[in-house]
Image 1 (cartoon, rainbow, N blue to C red):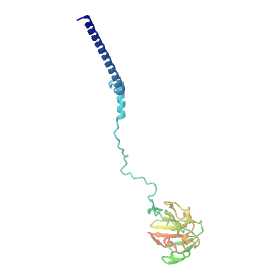
Image 2 (tube, rainbow, N blue to C red; image 1 turned 60 degrees about the vertical axis):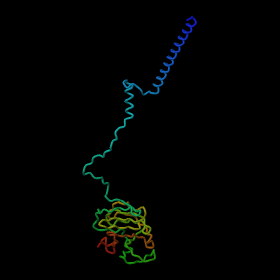
Image 3 (cartoon, helix red, strand yellow; image 1 turned 90 degrees about the vertical axis):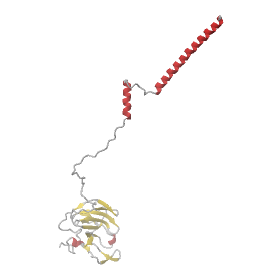
Amino acid sequence: MNHSEETKKKFKFRAGAVYAVLALCVAGVGIATWYSTSAKLLPDAQDETTTEGITAKIAADELTTVPDPVTPTSPDLPEDATPENNGDAENVTEEGGVAVLASKDSVARAETFSLPLEAGIAKAYSNGEMVQSKTMGDWRVHNGVDFKGTVGDAVKAINNGVVKAVYDDVLWGTVVEIDHGQGMIAKYCGLGKGSTPEVGEKVKINDRVGNLGTIPIESADDVHLHLEILQDGKAVEPLSAMGKDQNGEQK
């Protein structure tokens, strides 16, 4: 082997060594870059054996833990407990758009009845007989007693009772129905608007149940109160039901 060939071999060996070193360097840089990138992309990969790692794991568990559902329970009540009753047992309902009190026969009536007005009687109960109506120009039954008065006069309750209904009637004006107990309902017809008690209100004998107004179906007659009494749902002669004679005197 001459000197020239030996020189070429040494050059090739040194060049190969340089390339190998360069390859190792490039590989090292690549590994370092991959590790750095992986550490950034996986920040949660903390060592659970360190204090920071344990704290982070506990916080994560608290955020993802769902508490067991709690079933609401009602408080225990004594066996003899009953719903509280606020006021009387009567209930106000509606019948045909009119507030009506469901009757409970708890009215303690006075021994004698009082007249709703003291000026005298204008027209008697017809007891099923036809009588002439000046206003309507015909003949019809008169199912009540008309008591004389003046517009604005105080109309009094004929006995103790509870207001069952209050309404405006196209024929009879403002009407107050009072339950006087023992199956008796009195209708006070022809009262002034805004002068009446509330449904469910208790009244005593001679308490004011309204001021006297007018009655459209009997407007041709002098001002008066039209009083009807129903006994167990049937119209009866008011004065007799109150224990009075036809002049309004106590029997």
